[in-house]
Image 1 (cartoon, rainbow, N blue to C red):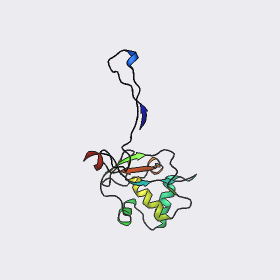
Image 2 (cartoon, rainbow, N blue to C red):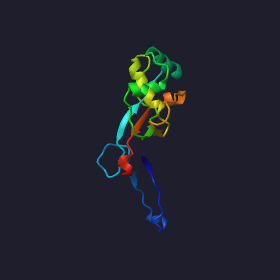
Image 3 (cartoon, rainbow, N blue to C red):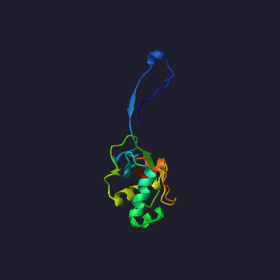
Image 4 (cartoon, helix red, strand yellow):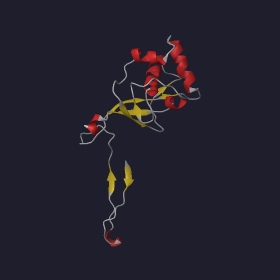
Amino acid sequence: MLGEQWANSGGPASRRRTERVLATLLRDGAGPLRLPRVIRAGLHFGDRDPLGAVLEALARTGLDDAELLRARYDAPATPLLVRVVPDARWGVQVAHGKDDSILQQALLLGLCTAFQYDPARPVLWTRASLTRRVELYEPAGFYA
């Protein structure tokens, strides 16, 4: 996080000091506090309706229930923290992607809220969830 923090040192204004602090927990570094990134997920739909595009891909694979994707694709088995990444340049292009790539990303997105990935929740596809681009982080490095 980048930012400027102000603190009152208890003295007159002539003793004011500015310190720029640069730090992030969202990295793979070897620092004492870290949240290593596990995976990224995202889909680019262009002009297509997100829900319709994913349901069409599901139908082309012969499946009629998003829950069946759990047996087809590997997904993290433990809860993870989610960071929504605005304006991300990565992700599967639905117009050019294969159904397997699209559905694997859709499974991950359907198991995410804006803050948490939960493998125990039902796969929920909404336009909001399908259009997020997210990074999933392992919280053990922070809470351990």
